[in-house]
Each structure stands twice: as structure tokens, then as C-alpha cells.
Length: 183
Image (tube, rainbow, N blue to C red; front, top):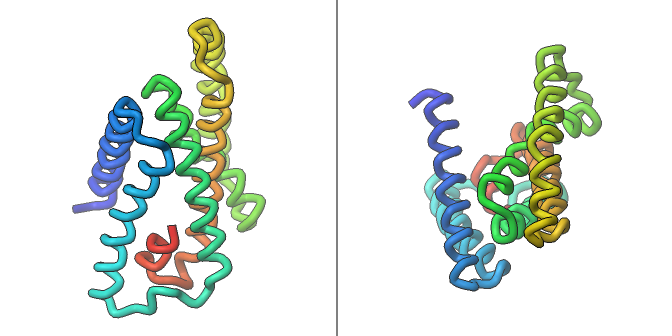
């Protein structure tokens, strides 16, 4: 498989996970229980991979790994909260704003200057956000959806951008499965 196929498979996996979160919410399973089940599956898979690769599961840059884990948890909690309280399409749209935040945070934290095409894409994404969310926000208020759910969706995207920026910093220093295990 090439990288494009892996990206498509990853997107499919996140879409399926989002659908399962929505179903779990309709069954009134608490948010933290949903997150715990996802974490349990992730720990099992990454621990098996770490065992196979024979690497130190604790890593060497523990503070940065722990930061990545905490940011990832908080981001995931926000994303799942948005999925539980917003229409699926709106919550998914908000989550997929993470590249905008990743670009900005990589520039600020990692000093990676975005090229012109990236800046144009970020600006177009922000225009799309305003164009799509403006009528949706008014409609959501009309039907009684709390603003906190929209803010959680945006917070989840921001947290994902920060988590990906931290992963970028860790990528050359730690085994990928160790990074996933801390999440």
C-alpha cells in the first residue's frame, strides 16, 4: 500500500470510530467510558507492536511523551463530546480543521514556515469554516444545541493540531508505537 491508500484507510477508520461513538452515545454510554474503551484497544494494539519490535515502552523523552498523551486525551474528549452533542457532519467538519491548527502551531512551536500554497489552503479552510458554520450555528441555537459542543469541536481540532505538532517533534526521537502508547 502507498501513503495515499494508508491515508484513505485512516480516514475510513476515524469515520467508523466516529459512528461507533455516536451509537455508544445513543445507548447512553458515558463519555469517559467510551474514551476508556478506545484507549484500552489502543493500548493493546500498541503494546503488542512494541513487544514485537522489542523497544522500551517507556521511551526516553518521557515529559514530551506525557504531554502528548495528556493533550491527546483532552483533544479526544473534546472530539467525542462534539460527536455526542452535534450532528455527525458538523462534528466531523470541526475535527477536520486540525490541519489549520497544525500548520499554525508547527510555525509557532517548531519554527516550520509554511509555504505559500499551505497559507492559501489555511485561508480557504477558514473561509469555509465561516461559510458553513455561520448558518449552522444559528440553526443549532434554534433547535437547542449548546454552544459548548461547538467550542468542544473546535477545541478538539486545536488539541489535535497540538498533538500532531508534538508527534512531529517526537518522531525522530521515539518509536512510533511508544508515541501511540502514551496516547
